[in-house]
Structures are given as structure tokens and as C-alpha cells.
Amino acid sequence: MPELAYVNGVITPLEEARVSVEDRGFQFADGIYEVAKIFDGKLIDLDRHLARLENSARMLELPLPMPLPELGRTCRDLHARSGIEDGVFYLQVTRGACPRVHAAPPGLEPTLVMTTRRLSRPLPEKITAITVPNNRWKMCACKAIALLPTVLAKHAAVKAGVNEAIFVGDDGLVLEGASDNVFCVKDGVLHTPPADGRILEGITRGRVLELAEERGIEVRVAPLPLDEFRAADEVFLTSSVLTVVPVVALDGRPVGDGRPGPVSTVLREAYWDFMRRFRDVTDSPNPSGSSSPA
Image (tube, rainbow, N blue to C red; front, top):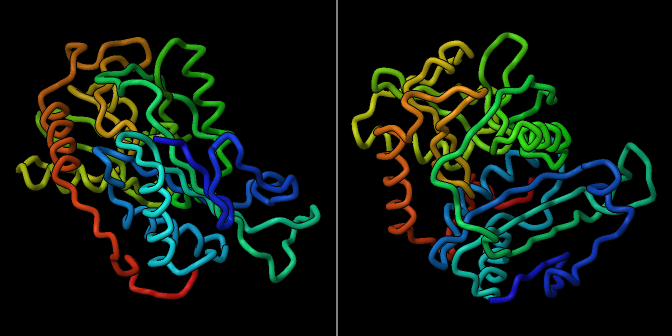
């Protein structure tokens, strides 16, 4: 089960992969990315990830290196070569490499990097979190590689002795975690902030909303004030890697009774059941309906 890297058509062991020091991803964070979960030998929701990648590319006017169907086949081929059963699949596209200049010259070839990694440790069944001020740019719907605010938020979480940091806007509205989407439960009703451009519309977030509807759980997608969030009976986060994980303490205080709540538990089990049943379509059409690069 080797950990592999793909860089512009060349596949090597992960530790041997190299990109140019003049790549615009390195110089300017001029790129986009996706992270998909590998579970039981399957790439979970790859087509949804590729559709979001295409949307991010469109927002930045960044050309993709190949049409989405071909990109999907390339992802699946690398995954198959690695043989990893449980891990993380990373995909990154940058505008390419050139001498350092802010405005990219025309005709650059995009840089495509993909990696496969095994999970380094078991996933947590519950976590703790703090809230931090939102200091990010206004294009959070774009999954860009410019992640310094996320890095600083993660550092703040480590310094506070917790697992995660949750961004709160200047208007007092809860937005999302540093690397995950946010949900809370009050009186049996599931609440989550809207995907209105201030957060990333998570792939797992979308699945959880579908699973909640299937199970008859009332859902309210609306702005979420911090005081209501702190008073919730349950809080949980979602991401492709973490899946669904309850938050049992927030800003040093227990959430509810300090244990994973019933709605969080139901949705966590539902999502894991979805992954067990998931069947990847190895030759799926372009998820966005377009066959040309963004």
C-alpha cells in the first residue's frame, strides 16, 4: 500500500515528488485543492469533489489541466495504484510555474498534483473547540490553497489545548470550523449556517443534510448567532476526513451534558453507513455537465 504522488503525469513515491520553486502555488498560493476520503478502498464522493473543484477554478479563472471525466479517471487510477484502503486523497491545481510576477503571463500550463496517504491515527469520536475571530478573505466558497488564517486558527486551538477552532464573524455569526462545517442542535432541530459565500459548501455537509432529511430531522439553514450556538444542546462538525464528530466542550464549557448527543450520534452512524454502502462510478460523466476545462 504505497503512498504515491502524481505531478503533471509523473507518478512517484510520495517522498520523492517535486514541484518547481517558481510554481505560483508556492509563490502566491495561486491554486485550488480538494480532499477526499478513502474508505474501505473507495474514493468517497469523488464526483462531488471534482464538481466543486471546477467551481473553484471558475471563480479564480484558473484553467484545469484536463476535462473533468479525464481528471476523474486519473484520480481513480492513482488511487488504484496505491491500493490504500483507508486514507486521504489530495488533489491540487495551481496556475503553473513561471518567473515571479504577480500577473500571470498567458499560456501557462497548470500544475496538477495528487497524493494518496494512509490515515496516520484513528479518527476521534468527540472533540473540543474554541471560537476565534474570522480573519479570512471574502471568497470562502472557493477552496483555495491560501490557508494562513486556517493555520493560525489551528495554532490557537493547540495553544488552548483543544482540537479545533470555529470562526465567528464581526457580526457575531458562527461561520465554520477551521477545516470543517458546523452544525448544532436545539430542542431536536438541526441548525447550520447557509452556504452564502462566507463558508465553504462542504461535501460531507451536503450529505449530512440529505441524511437528516431522510430521517425526518427538522433542519434550519439560517444565520447562527454565537449566543444561540453556545446554548445548543449538541454541536458537531463535518468534513471529508473527520466525517461527523461531536463537539463536547466549547470555549471551556460543556456542550449540553458534555457527551455526544442523540442527533449527532444518529447522523454520525448514518454517514458511516452511507460510506459503507457507497459505490463509486468509475466512468461517470462530468458532474457539472460540461466537457471542457474551466
